[in-house]
Amino acid sequence: MTKLLKKCGAGASLIAVIAFGACSDSGETAISDAQENTPDLCFHNGHIYDGEGGYANAGLTVIDGKIAGLEATAGNADCSQYANTAAQIIDLENAYLYPGFVDAHAHLLEIGLREMTLNLEGIASIEAVKEKLAEARDQTPVGETIFGRGWIETHWPEGRFLSKHDLDAVAPDHPVLLQRWGGHAMAANSLALEMAGITKNTPPPFGGDILLSDDGEPSGMLIDNAQGLVDALLPELTDARREAAFIKGAELYATAGWTGIQPMSVKAPDVAMIEALSDAGKLNIRVYNAVDFAGAETLFDGIAVDGPRQNKNGHVTTRTIKLYTDGALGSRGAALLAPYADRSDSDGLMLIEEETIMPILERALRDGIQMATHAIGDRANRKALDWYEEAFRRVPEDERKIAQPRWRIEHAQILSLDDIKRFNELGVIASMQPSHAILDLHFAVDRLGVERLAGGYAWRSLIDDGALIAAGSDAPFNGAGEPRIEFYAAVARKDADGFSAEGWYPDEKVSRIEALTMLTQWPAFAAFEEDRAGAINIGGNADFTIFDKDILAIPEAEILSVTTLLTIVDGKVIYEH
Ligand SMILES: [Zn+2]
Image (cartoon, rainbow, N blue to C red; front, side):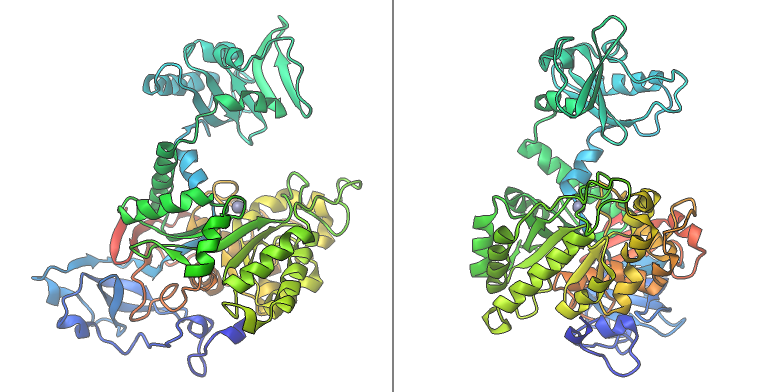
């Protein structure tokens, strides 16, 4: 992969090597150069990341959303010369300014929807659930479904599941569905059961159960697939609801410190919605969409003719097809080369076949379309690499619209050791989620055994073999969607409590600089934006993430308590602590 990248002179650090095609030198242009042109923004009195592992005690100016001036000489940069101008002056008060963090794999709609749902996480008793439900009842028109999620009874004083009677006591006139933490069970009230036609005589569906009380009537608890019986009662995904979710998700992301997101599995009709919301100033982070191929033929026909889609303000780009090759490790859906260690009759499931994927890949190469293919298990990853390689062979560079197509594998979670070097050889980007490792490793040893995990979440090995890793969170399905958590997971490779165990392969962790690169420059490269994003250089996008602490130096455990002070996109403050 590094062969694609221009060197910026001998001795260039990892960051500088892959920074900017133009190799502009951030130290050359003094802050005073911006004097003739009053800047829109001027930062001073902070630590500005210098792209080489340190900081400049620096001033930085922004004009028209681009970095205009950077004074890297310690102690002699300040913005006082602009005191009587229209410039917005930001005193960083010793805070730390980094290139904008970008989440290279997340689900924006679902992040927003999660926020719009009654959140019962951490609730301490059935009585407390009732109080929360009463609040939701008062805000919800009668007859409309109240949907909540996240409760768990294990520490409740009542020591039991919710029942329909608990919910009826508070909200008898709304259908109520409260999903248990983990998503494998749900409590419904009497109205919801009635509307779904669930009685004591309803046979539970395959893979599900309808719990009964002592009186032989449904208790209200629906287990696993029985939750499907109430699907029709879930709030409808209207345009208004989807718009609200995208706005909410983007707000939340700005608050966390992300300046950009690369949403996965976007539905084709939502692309225009995201573009319009961004142009209307309602969605302020940058968006680089990977679109579900099903139903997106027309969209990609357009991209084949006109090139990547962009909205008017240039913040939303669409050029990528998202496909799935297998499922997830937790549910044993990931496709493995050998059977699961804890289920010898299963090696997972491939979700797509060669006959289906090859025509899509060949066409994508001819049309200049990027691929982002989900692969978790070692068999799925090998297949994805084989198929990419075969497509590259069938469509040589001179027949491609874009010679180096920067195709991605999403997750690249469990790799056969033989396949690790193929990412660099084929120029395939590994799009990985550090937080997956620290969540999954608690059960991955059971699924795979210690030996097979040598190629699990193998960040260090991939980077050492020359691959680029675009890091993300997979929020809201696994990660919470916070840069500090992904950064911590990548450098610590321990869970949030500092736990690690046999099979966690601590040597696969990365350095602080590499983690920063995985969350800034490599996502930019994975989006063909490295000439203007992912680093702090003159002429580049003025997208910054500003933390209160030095994430490159503070003790590991402290990284999780870093506060995002400011998030800036295109020279505009989109979040202020
Ligand atoms: Zn995902």
